[in-house]
Image (cartoon, rainbow, N blue to C red):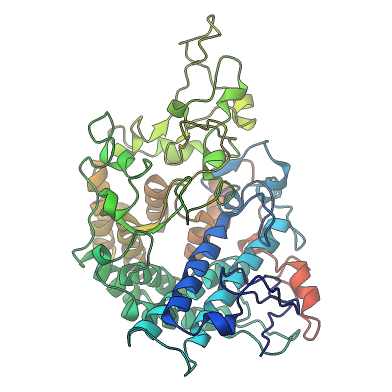
Length: 531
C-alpha cells in the first residue's frame, strides 16, 4: 500500500532505504519501505538512515529538503541573553531585531526537519509491529522501536519549545490529509515522556557495549529529565537525573585525557578537541555524541554543521592575519558571546582559561612584517563585522590539508554529565529544594575549580548563569530560556541589541505560513502576535 506524508509535514522521508514522499512517485532506484522493513538487516539499514537524517539538524547550503542558508544553529543562540548576531549574514538579523514572521525560511525549516525526523521514526516504529518481519533476535523489535521513539521525542522537543501546540503524529498516513489538529503542548509532552520511558527501558544499558554515537538508556533518561521539568513533573525529573548520575558509567572529566593530554591545556578543553568527544576516546562525561567526523564514511558532510563558522571570528579579513589552527580555522563570526558571560567567571575557573576562551589576537601573517607578532586591538566595529571578538574555543576546527574547508566535522556532544547535574539542580530549584540544588551545581563548579556557590545565592537566574558558563554553545539556549520562563526578561537585561525589540509573544515562533496554508481542511490561527 502506498504511504503518504501529509502536506502539513512538508518534508520528504529521507531515510536512506526507502522512497516515500508526499509525491506519488516510485523511483526504481530505491527500495520501498515494504521491502526494507522485512528483516533485522533491513531495519538496521533504516536505522542508519534515521541517524543520517537526524544529522541534518543544522544543515546549511545543500540540495535537500531542509537546506537553507548560513547556519540554522544561530537562530537558537543569537538575539538572546548570551549572544549578539553580527553584521555578517542578513538572513540572521531578524532573530536579533525580532522582525521574523511566519514566512521566514529558518522557521519553516526547523518545522520541516522535525516532522521529517518524526516521519522516519514513525515508519520504523509502525513497521516493527507487522507480523511478517523476520527478526534475528527476539529483542530486535523493541530495540528498533526504542531508537525510533527516542528520535520522535527528540524531534517533538524542537516543536514544543519553538511552536507550542503542534500536531501529534504517530503514524504515516495511508491517505493524504489536510485536516490536522494542533495537539495541546501538555499532551505532546506527556506522549514524549512515554516515548522516552520506553526508550530508556529498551535501549542498551552499558555504554561500553555500543559503538560511538549509538543511543543508550542514559541518553533517553537525560532527555527525559529535561522534558519532565518542561512538563512540570519535578520529582520524576530528579529521579531520572539521579539515575544517570549514579549509574557509575559516567564521570565529570577532571584530569587530562585524549590526544593532546601531554600538551598545554586543561581537562575542560580536552573534551572539545577533535577525536576527544567519544567514550572510546577517553571521554567518560559524554552521554550522546553525534558522529560527524571529517572524511569518514557515515559521518557528516561539509554542509551538516557550521558551528565553527558561527563562533570563530573571521579574523583573517583583517590585514596582518591569515587562517590558522591557533585561532580556530576559517570562521565567519556570525554570532558572538555577550560580555557578561565571560565577566561572570571567577579568574581561576578552568572554563575561564585561555584554552577555553580566546580573548586576544596577535597578527600572524609573516608576510606582513610590520604587524607580525603584535597584538591586535579589538574594536566595536570589528566585533560587529565578526572579524575579532572574545569567544569560546569549543568549536575550533581546521583540517590541516584544507584551511578553507566550510564544515565543522568534529563529533558533537549532544548530552554530557555536567548538564545532567544542572538539570537536576533546575528540578530541585523548581521543587523548592535549594540546598540540594546548590549541591548539584557545586559538583560542576568543583570540577572547574570554582568557588562553591552558597545556598542563599541559588535561584533560577544563577542556574542560567551557570549553564552559560558551562554549556555555552552546546545547549539550545532558546529552549532553556523557554523552559525556565526567562526568555524575554533575560534578553532585555543582557542583550542591548535586542532589548527594545523583543516582546512577550516572541517566546514562541510563528507556525510557518506554508504549513497553515497546506492544512486547508482545518483552518489554524497562528500563535498570538503573528496573525
